[in-house]
Image (cartoon, rainbow, N blue to C red; front, side):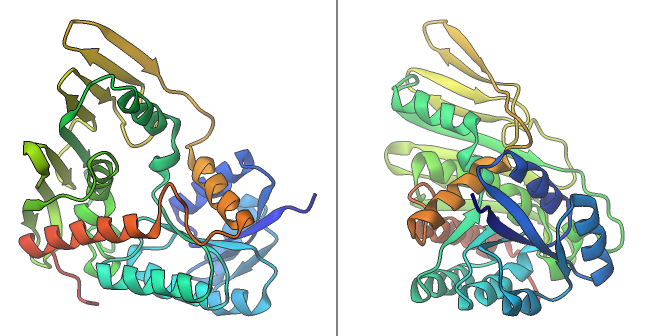
Length: 327
C-alpha cells in the first residue's frame, strides 16, 4: 500500500517530535523537510532519514510529490506559509497558534474554503487519550455541571540573545506559546466566554513575561488561566463541578501522571495515563483521516473553533497591550 507523504516545514524540537511520532501513525511517512537554511534542512533530513530537503518552501511546492504539509515554524510564519501551501491545494496541519491574530486566521480559513483544501490547527492535546478521558467523564456527568476551570502553563525561558520567547519578531511571550493551552481547555469545555478580564507583565518590547485572564460564562461559570516565562507554576488543570472535580495532573497538557476524579461524597478514582511517543500521532491520524475523506476541516477541531480561540487571544492581548511589530 502506498504511504501518505508528509513534508515538514521547520526543523526545531516540535518538528523532531513529529518525525518520531509519525512512525506510530497509520500508513504515513515523511518525504521532505524545509529548513531555515540548507545546512539545517540537510542535517534534519539525515538525522530522521528523510529523502528530500529544501531551504525554500516554494521549491518544494513546485516540485510536488507530497500529500500534506506540517508547519512547525515560529507562529509569525504560519500565516504566509499556510497560504502558500493552500494555494497549491496542499493540505495543511499547522502548529498552534494557527496565526498571531484573528484576521490572519480568517484569511487562512477563507483560503482553505476557496481551494477546497484541508486545514487544521495543530492543537495536539485535543486528541490525546488524557483529554479524551476528561471529556468522557464530563459526558458521564461524573462531576455534574462545570462551575469553574483553573489551568496554568509556565516555562522559565532563558533571556539569551535570540531566544524566541523574548523575540517580538517571532511572536514571543507566554500567551501565544503557553497560555493558549489553558485558554484552549476553557474553550473546549465551556465554549467562547461572554466577557474577559486580563492582566499581563510586559517587557519593554510589549511581549508578556506573564499573563492571567478570567473568562466569564453564563450562570456565574468562569475559568482562570495563567502563563509565565519567569515563574514555575503547578502545571495542573482542575475542573470543578457541582458534584466533584477532575484534576489533570502534571504535566497536564502532555502526558500527565493521571486523571484524578474526586466526588464530594469522598470517593476518589485515579486513571493513569500512558501511551507511546509524545502523542502527536493522534492528531496526525486525525488529519490523515479527514484528508482521505475529502474534508477541509476536522469535526473535532473545526475552523470556527480556531477562529473563536484566536478571538479570545486577541481580546486578552488588547486588554494587556501585548504587541508584535509585524501587525
